[in-house]
Image 1: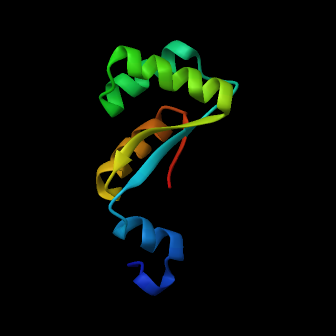
Image 2 (image 1 turned 180 degrees about the vertical axis):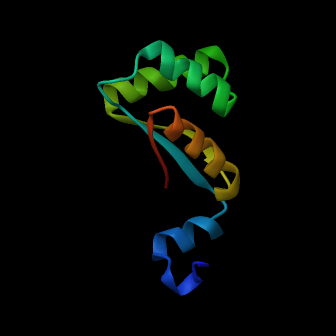
Image 3 (image 1 turned 90 degrees about the horizontal axis):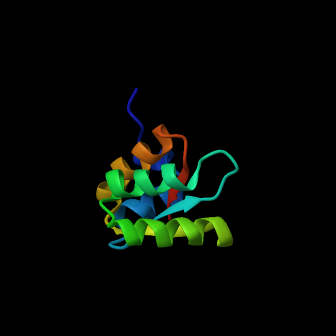
Length: 91
């Protein structure tokens, strides 16, 4: 069954049309620093230092915008992070 545009929440519709969306990763008590760093490098194409800085921001602030861009570019990254057990969303 196909999802019709009128059935989608407003924020989903807006998220697909906004030019700049943010991929946000949230802190948790499960994943290690090294795992989060490795995930950001592999999935978001971060450099080592960028991944480390984002991981510290996630740890101390509870969340961090790790990537910005078009919704359809961020969606596969978000899904890959979720598949690895990280908490992430596109805003």
